[in-house]
Length: 394
Image 1 (spheres, helix red, strand yellow):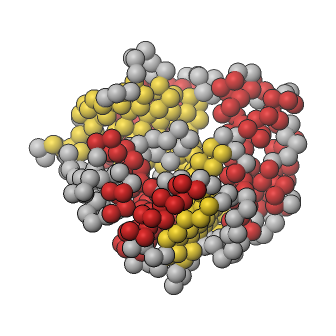
Image 2 (cartoon, helix red, strand yellow; image 1 turned 180 degrees about the vertical axis):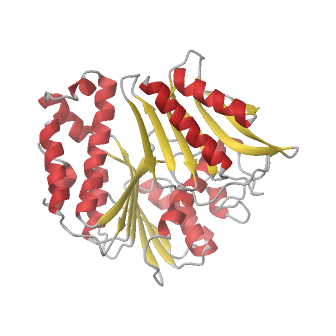
Image 3 (cartoon, one colour; image 1 turned 90 degrees about the horizontal axis):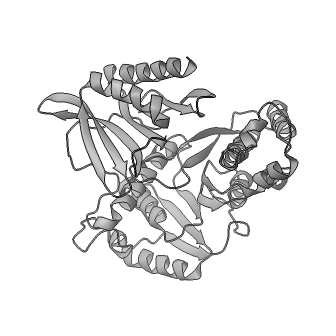
C-alpha cells in the first residue's frame, strides 16, 4: 500500500511538472528487472512534428534504445517501471528535484531537494546541444583526446565530453551563489588528467571573462607535466598544475576548492582545507567510505536500524550515507549552507554524490544544536570518531 501511494505521488509530481512546463528530465536507476544488460532509463521532453512527447532512452551495457511516448502513456510507463523494475528514480525540474527510493519494499522514501537546473531545455528533437564548453578552437580538448583536429568529438570520448559540460553546468550555478570578486582563486584537488580543470578555466576566463587563477593538484608527476604542457600550449597563463597531495597542499587564499572522487579520508582533508581558509565554495564528490565502515563492522551496534548492516551491500550504502551526512553537518557547524545531490548526467560516474558547502557569513557559527546532532549520530550508530571531526578539532 505504501509503495502504491508513493508511486502515485511521484508520478503526479512528474505530471504537474510537465503541465507547468518546469520538467527538465527524469532518470531511473538501480535496476532489478530481468532484462539482461539494462542499466538505466533517461527521460526528456521533446517535440516531433509539432507534437510533444516524452522520450525514453533505455541504456544498456553496449547500446541505447529510444522510445517516444505520449504524456499519458509515458506516465503509465513510469509508474510500471518504478513499481516492478527500478528502485530509484529522480525527477529534475526548475522548481525542485524529487527522488524516489524503494528499499526493497520495506521502506519507500520520497525526498524533495532544491533544483540544480535553472532552465527548461529546448524541445527540438535530435538537436545539437548548446553546451557551455564548445569544441571550436579548443586546443586542450584535442590534446586531451576529446576532439580531433577539426573540433569534432571523438566517438570514444562522447561520454567524457558530456561529463565535462555537465560538471561546468553545475559549477556555473553554484558560483552564482558566492560573492562576486574581481578575481577568484580555484584549487582542484586530485585533478588527474585535468579534463574538468581545463574546462572550468576555459569557462571562467574565456567564456565568462571572469579572471580566475586555477591550480590543479595531482600526486602523479607525469600527469602534472602533461597538464602543464597542455596549459602552456593553450595559452592558459593563469592555469598551473602542481605535484602533491591534498593533505600537504597549502590552500591559503582559496575561494573555490574542488575535490572530485578523493578516496576515503582524502575527501575530509579537502573539506578541512576549504573550511580552514574560509573558502566561499567547497565542492566534493566522495569516493570510498572505509574509515566509518570499519567502525560499523567492528562495533555492530544494536538499534532499530541494525538490519541495514546485516548485508554487505546495505552496510556499504549505510556507511556512505552516514559518512557524508556527518560531513554535511560539520560544514553547517562552521557556517556553510550545504547541498547534497546526485551528480547525474548522460555519462555516469561510479560515485555520483556531490556535497557542496557555500559559506554563509550570516550563519550562526559553532551551533551547539548541530554539534549535538553529530554526537547523537555517532553514539546511535557506534561511531567513535569521524576523520573530518578530528581534523577540525570538534
